[in-house]
Length: 163
Ligand SMILES: [Fe+2]
Ligand SMILES: [Fe+2]
Image (cartoon, rainbow, N blue to C red):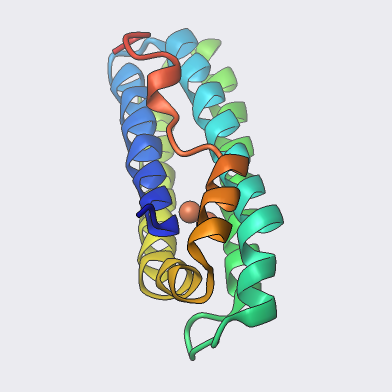
């Protein structure tokens, strides 16, 4: 039987795409870095849309919400994550025309490091609270129905692109 917690694998796909973006930055390949960051943003937005629209409403309606698992925190973290990506995209655009990009690139890596910590923290909270609770409160049929509405994989869309 399938479980909703299999959606946590999406986080690994996202991490992998972000790694590829940073790899391009590391080599001063800013066009490709931006292209992969766009891909990351699309995947992140879709995953967040799936959670906000399909999963969190079920959690709010029927979940036994424990301390540390408040739904509003998930919504707030989603917004923070999205805002960071918008900033990073602008910074990569700026890097393209920067004559001495070293300093700005180091700054960007540091900000992205902070973002990665936020994303890890978010992943831990979803792993500990959201997904186990969703698995517990949904029937087998409901799990299948919800899984049919969301995206469970992002990397297979472009398996070899830029990687
Ligand atoms: Fe998630
Ligand atoms: Fe999330």
